[in-house]
Length: 373
Image 1: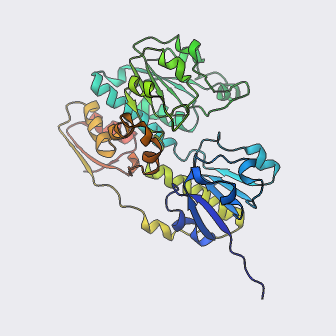
Image 2: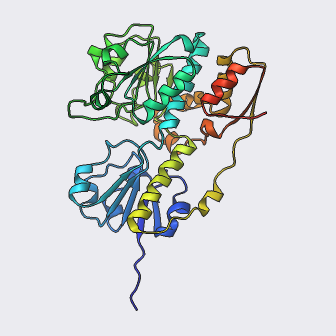
């Protein structure tokens, strides 16, 4: 009788529900992303990673890995040319965390607006990179009445310049948020896209957000730039982050803007569906019964104005100040906090009841909250 050889899968242990979702496809083993090495993958059929594993010839040359899946959107940790040249199938869960990142940026800006006592709807927002995240951020900002300046040269080349502005124009906005991939070559490379020359165009009343990738903004030049606020989720040299930039930033976090429960789960399921297709295996969904329950409803009574009401709701969904405190006084906790990140849910999973504030109701609806009552 022919013996059936069970397939082996090695999965980053930060991928949620790895055993539950992928278990029927073969023997599932998990390791922290930074511990996945050539020895660990030698006898593996499918490798599923997040951002902490460098997937290249050094890792895979002596392995039998035929499938590589990444449950995150960044691609700078993947040598795609090597995978293609060695006939290894590659899939990346593009867009899986876009909504989480857009929500994080809006939340951070509302927190800043409340602490600095300004009306967010009076501000302009320059969005650098209008892909998965940038499009969603644009829609959410518009729901708040924010004027948006969109900069995306690759899209402008394909679609025409209408609706887009050049980088220098976008950098004139009150708030600037970067959402490009990190690339090191080509006409539209983004490494140090916001360099000393571009930072010199800014004035001390502007706000700069990086929830994309470390390296898009030149950190050394940023340290010499005085701004109203710096919001820093992504850093150069992670996890060894710059203590001076921590001190200068209004809000810091350890690259977790895209770490909502729904974003992580979407990354897992997108790769799962692709792997089932690659192996011609039927998909199962019984694991969905083990997902957490919907959060309790949030009630807003007699909100003074829509912005304060929105701030109250956002703080009930996710205390981003905790993300800040987790590393502000202990930067060495960067990786540990990311790996053990507390669960929070995206807005479309949140039920909200608002009394006596129709404008807040309207804004919450545009932001995809579930309105009840």
